[in-house]
Length: 190
Image 1 (spheres, one colour):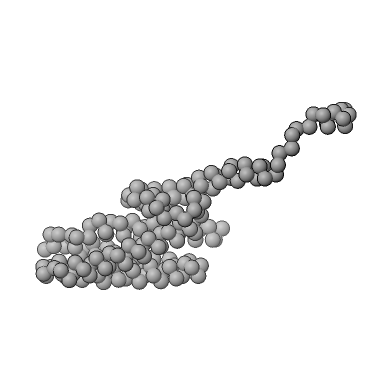
Image 2 (cartoon, rainbow, N blue to C red; image 1 turned 30 degrees about the vertical axis):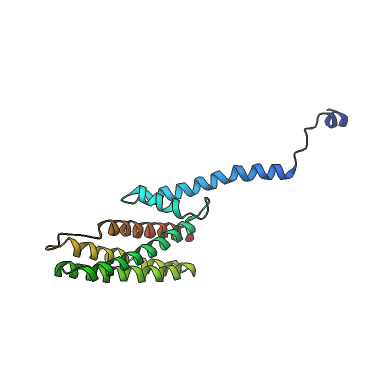
C-alpha cells in the first residue's frame, strides 16, 4: 500500500467545478437535440412530403431541445395559421370570380376551411389547458373538412383549382398535428 505522501505528490490537478459542469452541459445538449430530431423524423416519415414537414419544424422550433409537447404545439399553431390564411384567400378569390361552378366550389371550400380554422382554434385552447382528449376531438374533424374543399374543386365542371398548393400544405399540417398529438397522448398514458 502506498504512503499518504505518495498520493499528495501524484494527485491529479484539480479541475474547477464550473469547467466540469460546462463539459457536462455540452455533452448532454447534443443528445437532447438528437432526441428532438428523432421525434421530428418519426413524425415526418409518416407524411406525404417529408421535406415540408421537416422544414415546418425547423422554421418554428423555439429550442433545439424540443419535446413532443413543443412539437405538437408547433403543429397546432402552424395548422391554425395556415387555415386562417387559406380561409382569407378563399374569401378573396370568391369575391373576384364570376364562374358559377368555381363560385360554388369555393363556397364549399370557405365552409370547409371555416371548420378547420375553428377546430384548430378550439384545439389550441384545449392544448394549453392540457386537455388532450378535447384536442383530439377537435382535430379529428379537420381532414374531412379539408377534403370537402379538394373534392369540390376537382368535381366537373371545375377546370381550375386555385388552392392546389394550399390544400396540400393544409393536408400535411393536419396529418402532422394528428400524428404528434397521438405520440403525445401515448407518452401521457405510459
